[in-house]
Length: 162
Image 1: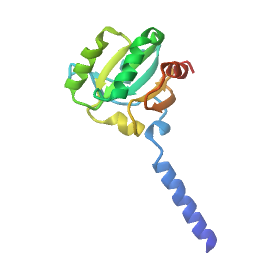
Image 2: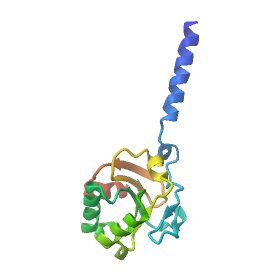
Image 3: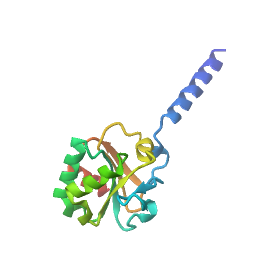
Image 4: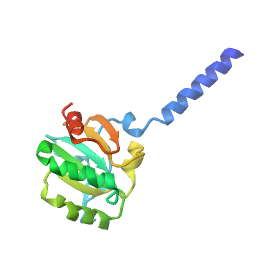
């Protein structure tokens, strides 16, 4: 009887741990999100990624001070990101996306794309708890690591070099 109870508890614990695993850990590749560009018509997906570059995804909120600071730090070191495609995604309205792009003149950087995540896919996929949220992918679009909160640029570049 005791063995049956232990087996039941063990199976139940394993089931709970599998359920709580974030999707990005189950599928460690660039996510199948359909993001919306600032024109509010064009979608951006994995197929649109530069095949020769590593990728840094930044889930952000345009009104978040930490997100603004991270963006400023990236722009101050933009030359170091020459071989990185930066995909910035927010769940905020498209008007906020446009304002953010304009404020930081992000359209002038070919390796940065700023998008809206209208289906709230990425926060769910990554189980985001804090913003900014960064996910790093190699050139094969395989997950390297994730980070919640502001990250020093030198550490971000180290992750992308892996």
